Length: 213
Image (cartoon, one colour):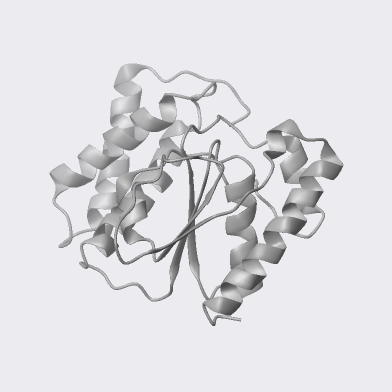
């Protein structure tokens, strides 16, 4: 979200209506069109709260709403989970949780599904975080900060929090861990790399305990 742009209200309504049509097709037989539309509108509003750029919001809204609806379907056992689901939560969803999600996918070779969220998401991922991940061959260009929502917590098997306090609701039957890690937004490039390395070590331990590596 590095460009600027403003949608007219009528244009935005048309764009979101097309998003609703696509997601209604995807979730046909699982959720009603009204539920799909509600999640799209909620997701747009949630992302818009912190956005300094609006031009990419409709496409990000589609991704965010699709993931939320998938999580809702999983939590209500309307679709089966094929892999263990890990949710990573930090404050801004712009550093620790994004790095953890990317590392978990890479190290597990896709044997787990991951989501990430923030208790107070920022509008973008810092360049120092991009650089630290690019250094080890992981690209976060398609990633974006998003707020923590209830259905993604309900859908998770494991919830990892990183500095977000009591923002994450507690549900029975889930594994919760809190990892103490410095906030990359407050660090220089070397400090961000150190956090990345610490996350990688914790991810390897977690995935070994989950018996996926």
